[in-house]
Length: 437
Image 1 (cartoon, rainbow, N blue to C red):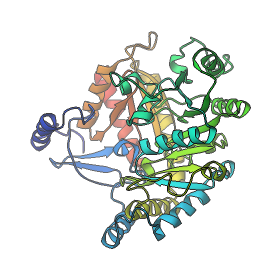
Image 2: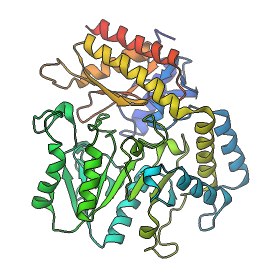
Image 3: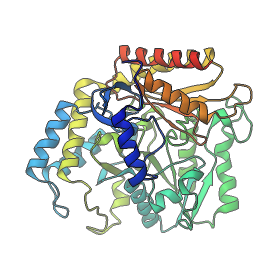
Image 4: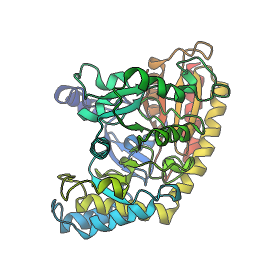
């Protein structure tokens, strides 16, 4: 697997076509073109094989092309694709199964609205919050990412997401997230008493018209660089919302379905949001999303007032059923917790060994590696991160980068990764960082 020649001739050809005919549609990652994948292994069009650290951007949680998943999708496609206005057995039973899957703290989420994409789910959550409360403002957080449609993009706290896309949706408020490695206030998490959370009051005082409907946040920030707030911070945000009669929306489009070592990330602190946005891993490659909500909130809508042209179609629902089957039967949430803890421990050791690896952080099988020019200045090293990605690819590990500064390596393999594959991939990273010096 190591010493892959990249880009191979076929990859180079397809990359040239992509650059010509779909400019701006592919993010800057490793210079390869995928041909096929199975489990945790990706094969490119030149026949090179790689351990996958991306899960196809945190989508294929149950592994690539799992036989049970594939079979359920094939059966569904052959029978019925999309009746739109009419219920199907797959849709109604999936809605029931999703409600039943809610953790003990979130049994208040007793209805399910099935959609197609994460952006659609976050847009729906904001629409529902505004409709239910009769207010128009939504608060999100610096560094947040909630999708690329207009409303979701408007709530982004990540400048690159909405740069030169104005005017944005009215009523957007932004407050600082708990990015402790780069605290905007220069404080330490052990002594700050969640100062950034208390800043929410300052945001309302200075930017709100007094019409705040909801707060939306990610339990960890994905696009900003796999940023995890300190324990207890999310609970404080939830309490802030409760105290002020504001709806609490959690965006778990990326974080759900076993990614953090729990089926849902809200389980880590026993959160009970009013609205929960789900996507990506729910379909494991088939476009699927869901909005979980309290019945009292959804009851304010007339029949058919909330709809989605392809949301809840039989194929997507069959895929989601298969995902839940596989997770239960193969105990993938447990594997995420076990292998993830092992990987994070080893990666923290690498951060102590290598000056350019400023921090390793994560939960389960979502880990961010923040690269810097040196640990003292913490100056982001985006070019170095791209060099690491390219060299990792040559070592037989495909990975990508995220982050406000483009300097965070994404470690998010499918939840089927084995300890042996994990160790092999981390050994490759150690070699790469030793080469770079």
